[in-house]
Image 1 (cartoon, rainbow, N blue to C red):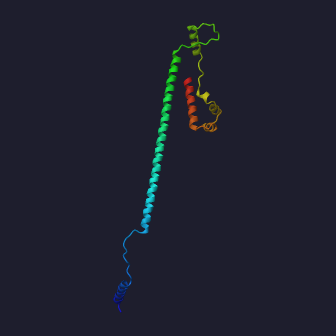
Image 2: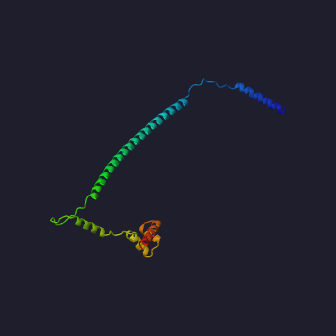
Image 3: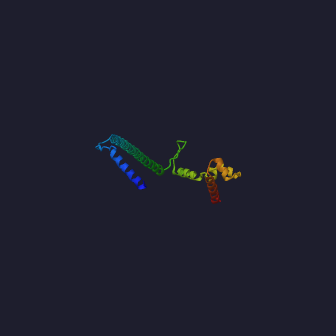
Length: 179
């Protein structure tokens, strides 16, 4: 037998076998257990999402009320501080506009305008000690003047190198301005 005969016999055999094997029955499509499980899972997911959304809404509402309360407290404090500032300004204005009252140890002395002038002149004569950068940062300048490097001074005092350089430069400018 030739090759085409074998192919024909094989095809006939397959055809007979396909007729002989039982066919699957077409069952009507009804919801299976997996689809009901999927529906239940989706319903639970939606319920969880709704409860999470409600919690988020409650959290946002609480945050808004807290912020509103804090804002009201701050506004009240600002108003109180403004009133206090206005009160202090008026008290300062009264102190400035009132003539200075001399306090005398002797009750029998008479208060004269000439005494007020003398007190004012005495106050003007005493100059306030001038605060320089060198007096403010004495330890820094002691270390720097003793020959320590800027890095060593900065490490010793726990400051930044740039900060130490700036202080030294400002002190030099201040000394130049005073001369």
